[in-house]
Image (tube, rainbow, N blue to C red; front, top):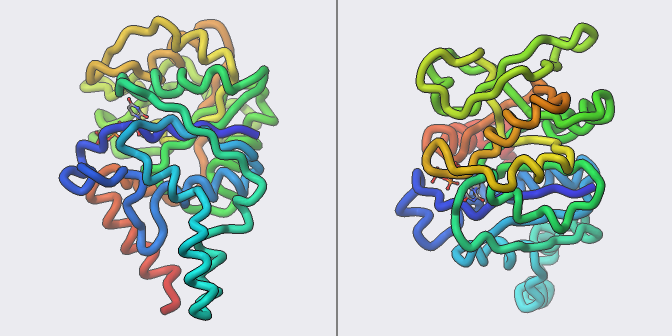
Length: 273
Ligand code: UTP
């Protein structure tokens, strides 16, 4: 029922746009990236959203808060239709919690900031810059895989061999009865040569609480950042972790190419005005 949204990253690849605006607030047409991901989580049954945020990301808090003044003005000017857009019914019973990551030490460190909010339960992690479109959503598919396998589940997709150096890459054997499930036996962050496969990690995970034990005291590695990948590499020595080849269309909106493609795709497929 809980999902962690690490949103404290610097968004370097999108400068100067992200100098004063959080990367996660960049709009894909008329909705910020972060709202697509929060919507995905909530529709998959998540009841508490835990943002790992930073002092430059206040706009995210404001976005999920109520704006009474704007609501009043919309009401008074007969533009009630927009009320649902700024105060969505599906978010009404969802709890939003914010934790500050003071020092941007990496994704692994960001997730560790949620430890005190997670009881003895598995939790989802969503990186909003991966926009993934599908019904059932990628998060729903991973939750189903978790319910079947009772272990941490990592979303993966197939990428061309020459692109593996941009991602975390897993290797694993297919679980017999499930063509989409791989029993992890290795995971490498941004392999520069000899990638273990062409299965790249995407920004969707369901993790068991034990991951925090592996994240503690983890030294920074690739990019001088504390990497979630390194914690998972330790984890698979002790417990089962699976990769799940989800169905869906993914856009890497942390890159300019992916961002433009997402806008093009939605403009071509979903816009009715
Ligand atoms: P990225 O590797 O995409 O980094 O982080 P970034 O800062 O967002 O973007 P670039 O690479 O500088 O352009 C993956 C996810 O981890 C979060 C980011 O917000 C993003 O959702 N993150 C990363 C943190 O929350 N804290 C960190 O210290 C680093």
